Image 1: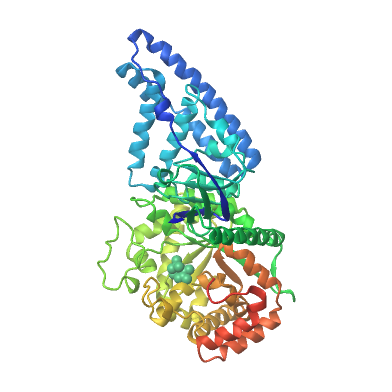
Image 2 (image 1 turned 180 degrees about the vertical axis):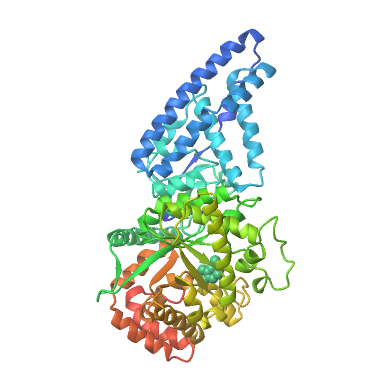
Amino acid sequence: MKELHGIPVSPGIGIGKVFLYLDNMALEIPRYDITRGQVEYEWSRFTAALSNAVAEVRSLYDQAVQEMSSDQAEIFQAHSMMLEDKQFHEQIRTKLENDLQNIEWIVWEVSHELIQKMSASPDAYLRERAADIAGVSHYILDWFVSNKKTSLAALPDHTILVAHDLMPADILSLDRSKVTGIVMDSGGRTAHTAILARAFEIPAVLGLSGITKNLNGAEVLVLNGDTGVVIIDPDAPTQKRYEKARSEYQKKLALFESLRKLPAQTRDGHTVKLHANIEIAEEAEQLSCYGADGIGLYRSEFLFLSSAHVASEEKQFQAYRRVIKIMGNLPVTIRTIDIGGDKVLPGIQQANNEKNPLLGWRAIRFCLARPGFFKTQLRAVLRASAFGTVRILFPLISGCEELEQVLTVLEEAKAECRQKGQLYDEHIAVGSMIEVPSAALTADILAEKSDFFSIGTNDLVQYTMAVDRGNEQVNHLAQPFHPAILRLIKYTIDSAHAKGIPAAMCGEFAGAPLATMLLLGLGLDEFSMTAQAIPIIKHIIRSVTWEQCRLLAEKALSCTAEQQVLRLLEEHNLERIGHGKSA
Ligand code: PEP
Ligand code: MG
């Protein structure tokens, strides 16, 4: 038995026999010299294979449109465009004339060079697009060499598909009733395989470099698509544990499915909103299956952190608009860039040159010191706001003057959009994150200039308790249920309500089942969390009364220490959720 850890990209438990899908394409491609007189003949073979490949991808697109969202199906449209790219054709033609070798070898070589160039790029986006080039060349090469696709259409029952890389077309051609999991050497959350695995609800763990080399195809594999754990040849107790987890997961899914379209409403009719936190645009695609009422936190810095270059206004605008379009009329809360601290932006900030980065040049402080950079992001958000319901959220606000400065820059960005004739939502809602104690304690003042609050408990706990959230040695000292934190949350919510604005929470506390009744009782209006937590939180909300929660919150506020609060909440929650402090 061997345990490995990869990137969890599609939730669920997979148990099955390994099917090794190895890419032997290079070995199968014949290579021979041709004469100059044969160039036109080879070229005609290329154009014939190309038009077959184009037709194939178009029909894959038609199939995909029937089976998944149009956004996901766009992968095939992108492949079709790449196939028809004139520059790609010219490269092949030039190499054919120069090297005088058979056309399938030339296609393989040109694509291979492109793939290597893109795989070595510092830009994560380009690195992941290398897989698309591989896919596109396979469509053409499949018309010359033996076609392997049939092998994926006829797999044995309970298969865990293990590959170095899979093409979107491979996933479409899979007999999905037979595949209980996907594992790959390559890939990450934004890889197309990941997107399609989520769309087809196949548990998947990617980025396990070298796993194909560790297997011979005779093994049994279990994988957890929520944690990224993969176990090769589990012993009997481990396999049993995973089988139990899988049946519990399936029961949970059935319960969650029944809750998906129901409101987050207590038994006595009090309704709150359950929003999702996302880091990358692709995550928005799966939110409707969890029943999210919108996006409460889009951590926009990930758009910058995934690339060696600063994202341009256009690139940001495209990413925001994509999320907004996926969400339809539901609200999308875009938090302006929160870098610094533990998230260093390459090329702009130097790692570790501050003694206390978490107390340093972070988030809104960085943006106010770089108004040009900040305004670029604000313009991108404003322009995207013309396409749906957008809210802007400012991180690490510490007081009223800082918020005023931010609002001045926002007005300047609006003026620039107007000057260029760019449309935006003039009444775009502006929110302050309450994650610094000074902001919580002046929430009544900040409420005058905010349209909503969002409490960031991850940082609020860190800064209130003086516990570095990333430091393993002191992590256990962080107490989200500490009376100080409860008082700061209560004061923030009460101040919001006194000014008639909603109070949201987007820190991990909002998705912790043990905190749900307490937060409801304190009057929280919106809970924003990792999407997977939404169903269980909704289940709790729908099984209690608001009256019950208000009484519980009152009692919790009179406790003198975290342990006392925890005991109180556990007594009330035990029969409902059956577990402790962590989310
Ligand atoms: C928080 O601090 O609670 C929060 C949601 O922001 P982040 O985790 O991105 O710092
Ligand atoms: Mg924070």
